[in-house]
Length: 263
Image (cartoon, rainbow, N blue to C red; front, side):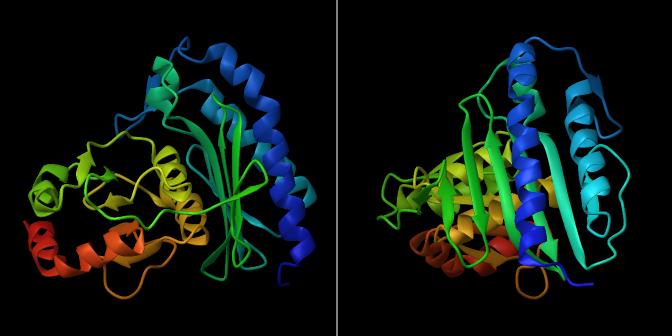
């Protein structure tokens, strides 16, 4: 059966409440927690799993027809075309080392389209939310990107090939920051106008890294260009997102960027 608006908002509120409820425990372990390495050598803590399991269990109990995809546990298939995608702690390395680039993230995909997102920056107690067509918010205050001149602007690169892209941006005096390993933080900076863009090219990102933040930024006025076949979809992993001015610059250099990606 299709997902109702009430079910969307209800399941979204459950996730927000769980993220906030975990804040005291997360802050107690902030910069002071042991970790293990997964098969891809990325770090994971017991709190990554604990946060994800709490959301998974609550959603399964109250909204069993909504599917679930998390970074740390097994998927639950959707019975309604709706799927919550969860990254329990995005920027786990930052969390381990006590750096403020870590967030809790969730995005709701319905019939292949992202319709809601939650990003909670727990070190600073900032809650970012978006619903498709309703705008982007930080702590209930509407936010938007800044489509300023690119001269001396800042772009975050989620790409480990950022040095190959830098020479394309340098003549325009755009500062390209190296990967933070914290997609949620990067997207929130874009959505509230602190930076002009985020590049996601040749990344190690997966859908849970990008789905919540792309909707947030787009609802704040950002544009996205896909570097895969066809337009951007929720599971597109090669893309650039940013202000209209930044995307215009990227479009001018699209042939060169595609050549770089082929190397």
